[in-house]
Length: 216
Image (cartoon, rainbow, N blue to C red; front, side, top):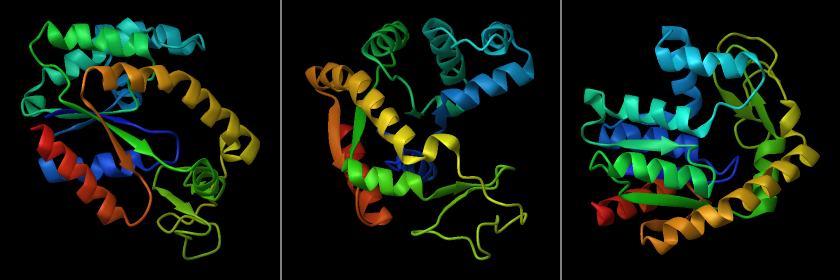
């Protein structure tokens, strides 16, 4: 199964992608992780990406798609993969579709996470991140054991600048503007499936698995 997760910041798609990854035993492909891995490995694509990143520029779509295609040709992607965070726009979706179609491996289903904006703001405003990458917590829903310090390393947790309410509202507006055409693109092709991304985590996982099984 080749699956795309669409959803605004704070919708839980990253968490659910990890759960589905473990359930189906297929890799979760994050473009950010792919870029960092390629740069670290010093591959040809990684070197090209680094030149843009070092200059403070966005990595071009065609280069990101090349990284995805290169990664999906590895043996662990033979049974499929979950794309989390890409594509973000209709032109990216079209370019990705062309690249996958040429290899006879089209996307099977696109899961679109729907959630009330007020709930998203509440989730993101309270989010706190470990500066050393040990995880994230929430002051209301998942508080750390000791005030606002990481449960693993004890370092003070970080309230990211873009997790303040005014920045969140701007991010959500940008997401809505970019992804409405993207949702229409996949809906027209009959592979978009909407899911209520609110409630118990296990219930959301069950809804996702039902949609994936129906698309298999």
